[in-house]
Length: 452
Image 1 (cartoon, rainbow, N blue to C red):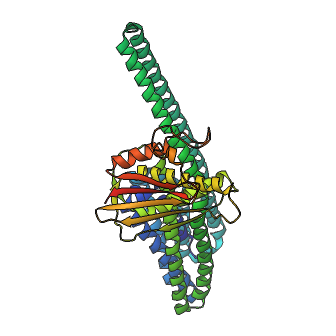
Image 2 (tube, helix red, strand yellow):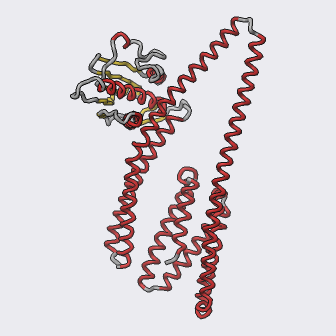
Image 3 (cartoon, helix red, strand yellow):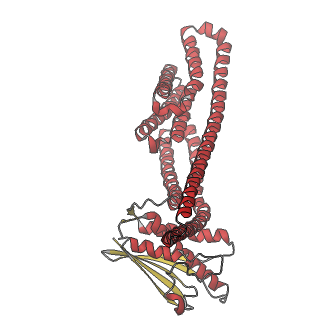
């Protein structure tokens, strides 16, 4: 069996992963996938022909592998798109040359090859060791270069921030020195400081919710990763069976196994996309708000943040537990919202709901079952999101204050009082409404309406 096709598959996989061709080079990603499938097909064909004793076809396929690998190395060497992986050309080229010369000598003079095949084998082995060593050294150098660049960028960023802060301080000192006696300037300076403090508090609240979200990520992402791992193991076993059936020339069984592998691969892709969506949701929540609205599946968004909120609280308190359920209206279409902002609103409300049922459970009798639910409704021109809990409820004397900035019923150190205030502002900025209904001792319901 020729090693060239396996090498092609390895190189193509490395290029797609390292260069992220699916995102940055979609055209080349398609070509590389076609190359991988072609190499796999040739590899299978070569195994079949070798097993059948058709040596000339096996040799012809080997020649195709050399041409194929040579073309791939030429593309890596010449094309700017593959420049970061150019070291592969120098790592693999010696082996390709040695392998071609070995087969040429064998084809031209069998007697000469039989006398000197130990030398050619040694050359191929040396070329292989050279390729592996060259790849390992280059990879290490690339990692060190990436670290050095990251460190340089971080230092540059820190220096820039320091210079900016220095310039700002110099401006402030100059302004205060020149206009210290003017009340207007004093009030403007105080207002600026107040706004800066408010921004810091808002950022602090956002980072706190991000911490809870991140804690939930680890548990939530484990399920799709387990599926990916399990189906990958099954595929490996099926491929071993396929090789055995190929050697037996059992074509029908090979087709059945190939179908199973394809089905499993579809499941791997599905759960991989699920894990990718969870990570993207976390990144979107953490990145700076761009203010851009985009079509969003509210049902999927609510379901995701409900689970992440639950697992986030479980990560902080292993003794915490609660039931939760969803009731989604499947007729709801995607609506244009700032996904990051609506996600923050949902996360705040879910966190408050789980906190409420957790507090009640600590004092309730053994029959109490904590429950948090989310429901969506299609109201034609609007959609409604309802978040309910059966916690302790909100006292009547504070119900009118819950959307005010810095108001909180949580103990000191457990809340900033900004979550509901920010949520209220976000919903209003989307042209929607948010209201609360609560019965002390029985639970609370939040109603959010957004334009559809």
